[in-house]
Image (cartoon, rainbow, N blue to C red; front, side, top):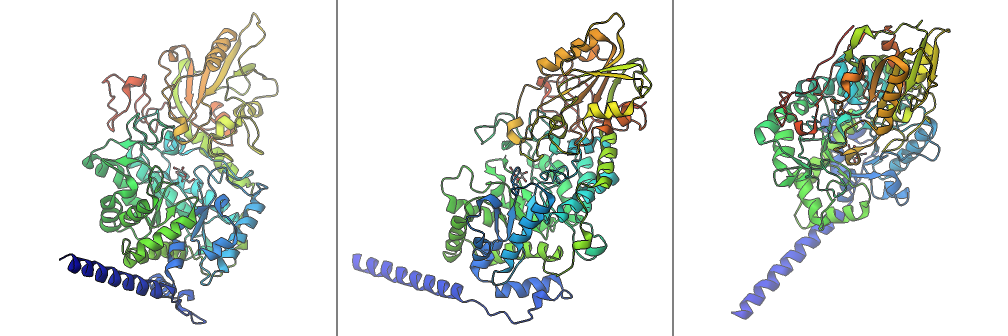
Length: 628
Ligand code: BGC
């Protein structure tokens, strides 16, 4: 009996070893590529080109395509060719040594040249988070963050903003953007509220589609190709996470557990993704959230059956930053599970050597099938062909200059449309440019870093006036008033006392910049300094207008009665003069609240129909906004 068992074990082991050897031998065979392969034929269909290219690819080359590496993690540039890397990214704050448009282009062209040196010369996708312009580049145009664009409800404007952003991306060699955000923030304690357009699925859908089209739409020189590949994110259920459920020990709600049941998830969070798929999105990012018992990267039903199956998504799914491996002890198994669930490209973003080894073994052991790998690679190649990356177009005349005056004009127009007028007692606004004097105070009045917010040069943003070419809200006010108007500014509102009060004081107050879970907080109140500035202004001016520069509504119910006027300016970006355009009546107030404005923390989270958690009344409902 024992001998028989032993014989069976030995036979099984031998058969398995032989099978492995055959697999290995098969994978070592490198198909020969003819001089003019079909995949280089611009006139052939994308499907034929993919099939042809796949037929020449070794397993290592396929796995390389599924690999997304942060550029600072490349050990030696030669690895781009040797590991057949499919895509690189600049994470937030990761720039060339000199952060100029020219150096970005030179850097990325260099990486592309290295990719060309690989056997098949498959071009790279190079991605950045252009979530409010190409704001990692020193002189690029910085548009308002998405929540402000949501306040405009203006799809045409969003289309133009995305198109201008795409032009600046291509000018620096970037062909891929991790935007737009289709999240639906229901809890303003989340540090990513401002990255979303709204919590209303209908508005998120409309503006998300406009953004995708703006990024991807052909210019004359890109007639048949996408211009910049969009990546709607984060699939699925972001914005509906529960406070205090984050899997990241540093955070509270970011990377947390999505509360929605299946019905709500499908009814509210899915439609914007269905719409962008329909509009031609060819890459979608999977979120770092958990739903039910599982992280999103493992939800095969949502990733594969629903998105790729029912919704007919032809593009590829890219995981978020370290999202496949974070918190997983067994990274081999994490890779196997995520790829089998439907992740096509893994944003590692660091250790690509281990990933290549793991996925190779997973395939050899039959844990990830050839079909799954071919499907993933085919999807990535689809996007690359659709972008025209294999075509040898001369793009030089399509490249816009940076800084770009036309784009700055557009940004200023956008700022004006994002402003929401919440209170205007005694017709305080519009202000007359001939007013005798204005006192200005507050932490965000003369602080471009607060205005542009995070994801600008650095991930968490940089406080202060350091961004070349940008204008602060204060300088916008100064440049609009008549020559005889006296403008005085003090951040804390400490003005010399005089018997006659100034007619108007403007307090520009708000939040410090923050990104992602670092902005998770319950302290959604004005700082002591800003409250002091408002109090000081009230002592020196007859009427005080408060402008809030923030990534979300703040709790102001206790103070609002003392403001004569109140404007929500969100995170307007680099063109502070867009604010004064509206304050002085050159342009109308057209913005409305893209999300409800609560009066107290107990109201959170706020439901889709504006219902508060404690049943009390909101300070302002969604879409509230006065006009003059
Ligand atoms: C964010 C993504 C972003 C990615 C790449 C992650 O931390 O969650 O939204 O696209 O980083 O920078």
